[in-house]
Picture (cartoon, one colour):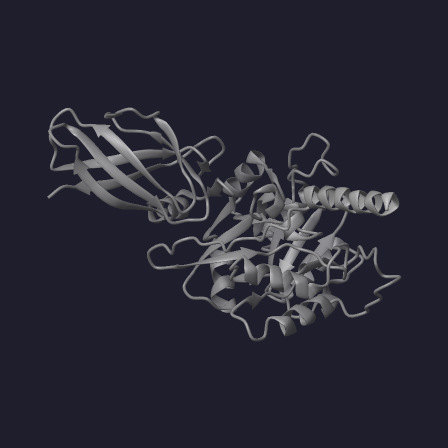
Length: 371
């Protein structure tokens, strides 16, 4: 009997430890509003499976994306780096894409063909997406690999340029190789967010060289264990396309219509980030508190990012910090001391969790009218 009880205690203890290691909390669907003239597509265009150095089968990537309500993904397997080749030999570098495409055929998820051109510094790692044949990119010389990607009208972006394994200072270094690729039209984007890392220096390079701003998970394990269980969602690129199609997504990326998002961090060019933030906040109610000149404004955050703001008006708040957060999907009341009764005011909030340049946050405005 004692032995049975001891075994039961050991089993229960192990169960508790296992539960503490992995909560198995499910990922939630991601939602971001459209902006005027464009459909907002939620994308993750850098991830791996067992067909390079990832730890899951390609079908899992599709299932994860469907659960999170993504619109497009790309399995960008390393062309040159194949650590699982002894167990999963595959002479066709298009195989992971084919398996993902088959898994997604009955779902409204765009599967973008892609591969990662992998070299040591100063060439670094780059993703080529919208390719027609990954095998044709397997060239000994890196410049020929990029030329082959251009021949397929690929959109190519520079992966984790600040990665300390290649740049020990943690800063991106724009090499002669990358400068040459930009001049030749063979490099079009740059990751400012990769995994959990945000590099202001990469944003500066994007703006200086007119490169499309990207955010990706670069996931190798499970999205749940790398992000969801930590209370985070994967980094993504919001792409502002004319419609939901592969062709429209490709056009938008080449045109640079993107915002990189990682939870409450949003990074993009002002012309796209400001409209996104404005559409993410809906004004639900505007009225004066009875017998006062204190204006009550109720705001709703319809995006999946908690948004952090600072009062940028000449008017002060009543009984509230000038810095405040509106959680994803939540409402927040602002009480504004307008000093006298107004028929109209302009609500101005600085989005201090968003960046249009290194250390530069945009100010968003809403015109509020009262009956």
